Length: 435
Image 1 (tube, one colour):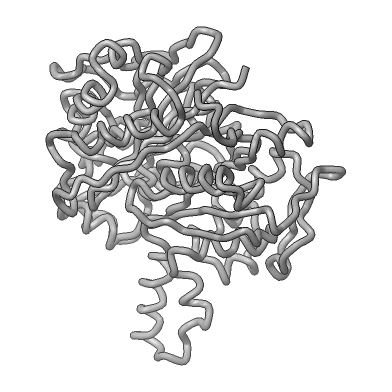
Image 2 (cartoon, helix red, strand yellow; image 1 turned 135 degrees about the vertical axis):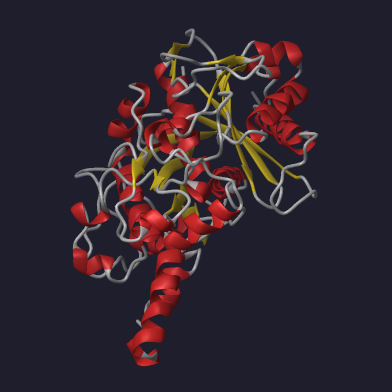
């Protein structure tokens, strides 16, 4: 642990996922081994190579007025839902800065702590942005002409739209950012938020990620790449990291948001601290636009750099939430990079999980959600197991959590969350238990 720089704590958490409409229900379902992967009920779905996905458990219109949803892409709406939960869970009052969203309730806690908007930032990422808006608006244009296209189309489809809406709603004037690095996007957002606080740009940062692009075009594209599982007859068992019979990832959607604060700011207001966001490491494979470097060198460097940034040693780690998407090559390659990056002895002392087995792959939202899972594993002392792991791959030689959640020992502990994306983006984020 480094003592030479400002320490960053996590004080608020929120999510809406295929497992639940908020974080408590999501975490409970994850520990119970439930699946959020379901058969799609679209018209014409039978023509697609993959006919299932990890869709939201609770739809946005169940918690947000429909008139507000008309000006929001689905990925923006769920980002606001997760951000509101995180904000309230951190004990903040409804913000007074910024204009807010017209007709939208500005959430907060009665008697909660007020944040100066000049000291509040947002880093909220999406790997793809408003895909539904882009494609649906083009259909409107072709069928009804340009004059029927909504004037809100561009704000709804732009990848930074979710970050912008969250920044406006909470009056965040220290900066609003949206980092785009495919499936590593929201892990990178957490790392950028840590840096914003460390360098003094903000006292509080709302950070995380969102993605909602379960659409026929996306399903067809990934299907054409042969990247997705085709277990159409048993979707809940389709995502199976480390299993010999894994055949690809499962597309998911959702949003996850964390509230980060400087430790000084959080302690001064008596906030509950879930743990420390201790550091992040980044690397680029510079190898291929889709395929990861088979040597795993870039992934190993990201983990090493995360530990260095956090002031941790490999032996401080007790757990890794792996990127593990359930692809034949990617899962075992990541385990090799863990051993290369941390050393054989330290790697064999870790417990490894892969939560995409239940949530599916949220693409740009995955890193934030799995960062929250990593933090909660430390806080609650329990690691979720890998679902659908029935026949362990012969190449797997690390301690994978199987069959039931694994208890962690009490005392000081740290963990990593790995997120890797198309383009060769590698991000690893380090967390520490608050004692």
